[in-house]
Length: 62
Image 1 (cartoon, helix red, strand yellow):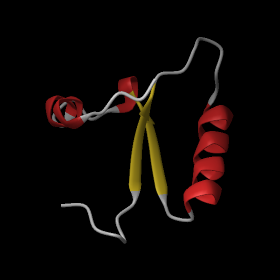
Image 2 (spheres, helix red, strand yellow):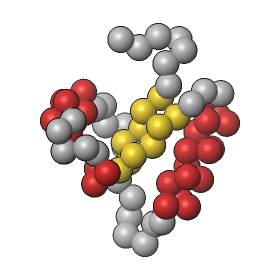
Image 3 (cartoon, one colour):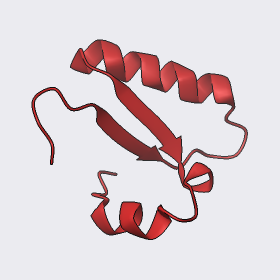
Image 4 (cartoon, one colour):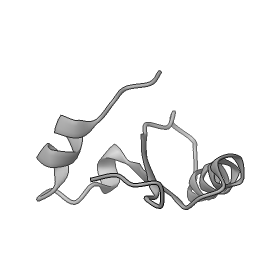
């Protein structure tokens, strides 16, 4: 259950050539914008046991 204090979880799909630094940079920018903790992960980094639950609840923005 999400609350006002909940963090924001963002699932991203980067184009080829993006690096871990790009991921960290995105995380920092989003935290500055939203003024709260943001977790950014990629499809390949999702724990296989949790993947079906995460993908079931995803909301595609772009």
